[in-house]
Length: 157
Length: 157
Image 1 (cartoon, rainbow over the protein chains, first blue to last red):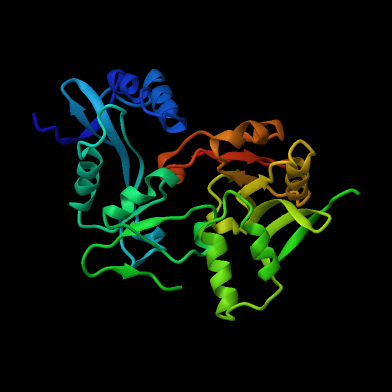
Image 2: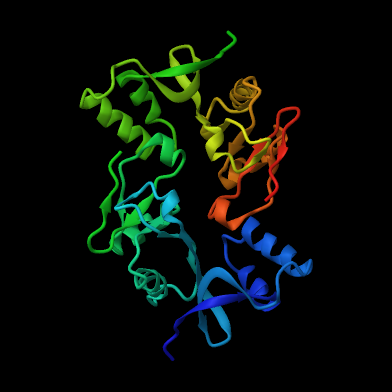
């Protein structure tokens, strides 16, 4: 078995799977409400990508495309990806699932930004992510790491 | 002694005091670099506000004014304040220092947004902060709480 990264569909089954992840929160509750209120179709696409081991969702991340209008990080300014909620369930760690998720994102060949939890900074750094110079107006309480595809560099302010 | 909230000045003494706080990070390192490179004057104002107990800085928060152009939270759209790094040193907690910092911010009578750590959500809620409806494009990995002054409400999208 060679588990692959899949784009997750929002439905009750997925919402149940999400409850096993530590970073279950406002985002998931909002999706659940939208499902219950029929504001979204069952099987709508989400910004979540995940890895199934058999029938079980064992790793996930949220991946969202930000418009170049909002790009304050990259030179030249361009559309970029933002990653959050990257998480592998206990018992399934050390199987390169986190790495597979990151590589999936890198395959878009777009710059990536993330504001990782303290305990996942090292992992992102190992995957080639770098800190940016802190700027209060842009970063406020964040301490972001970014990944540059070839030909892209840090935006100077 | 009745400790008061003060706007902190960026100098080597303040930077030393900051090292005692758990959320010491990129923001403080950047200020320290700017001091060392003479890019800012000793005694420049910072976005930090704090409370001294005698000579010792025992509580602090970062408070920054965001321009109405960036307001996606409040109706009518307007300048608002963002709080982060609100923290009271161990041994000085339960003295209402956190409450004093929040009340200082509320005195501006502007809406306030914060994206608190899990362990401080309850405190902010006790201080009248409320969750907003999660919106992926705006909130991404955040789970913000906001405070509305009289006459201000949640922005509908």
